[in-house]
Image 1 (tube, rainbow, N blue to C red):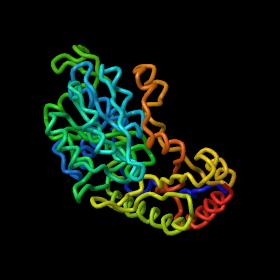
Image 2 (cartoon, rainbow, N blue to C red):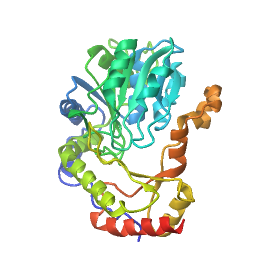
Image 3 (tube, helix red, strand yellow):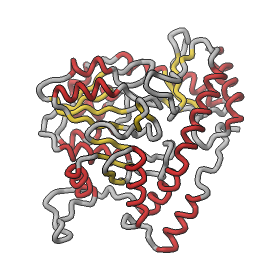
Length: 373
């Protein structure tokens, strides 16, 4: 039997709110749940404004656009993250500058950021990776000293805190993703948050095809249809009600794996806690030490034969063919931690729909497979 054994994720108020959408006919982006979801998320993280969109990728696109950075501006970001972080930059005439990450937390190595700053640097993108937040204070201080904008990519971190303050409340702009594997899901969806009303006005304008405010169907700029539907927002409102429970469940899953796999030689487990945060285990991410005579793909294939589903770590952005084609100088860049994590890291079943009772058996399979190498 494949793992995990899924439990229902859509129940209770999700069904009630979806029924309300259908019965009232409000299924498009103009329905009342969209504004309610925006208010709920903004209030939860302590932001003045938020805008619901179709995905985390759309949120990042609109966030970069809203900063109105001059063409040729450089944006510093870690190489070890999803390609969505860089995919909008070529269209906007911006240049990504990649730095390496800490191999234990998977997050941006803060000490490398300052060395990457040039006169062309205008912004820093800070994603929180796999359940632990970045050490934000030194990055925010660096940005203030150099006059740089900060986008906080909290796509994987809703419900997480940094020194007790909600992730998603930092920087000039922050974003969330509501993909099904997140702690709050709308199926597909995202959110952009900011305190500056001018930034939010720009985002709302560009999210809705940049319609002229006086005469619809006239467009001085080319915007995008990144509107979230009322159906998606209804799911989001119900999911926000469950967020504390979901964070608690994720931590239980992480603790169960930590307990079961703590004695496996050659398998590095995720850090449970830093000085400023407790892991919320967006995924349960493990890394093969050099003592294991196999890479992640080989171990994952062996686990798959036993019905244990796994997924690769992110592939480094400085090695992405699509980005090298746009920025040829990336071909010579070497970021060893990001490259090693991509080669030797993977994550195991840890979704909110899994059965906690399966973890001992899954863990035993992992132990047996690791010993084969």
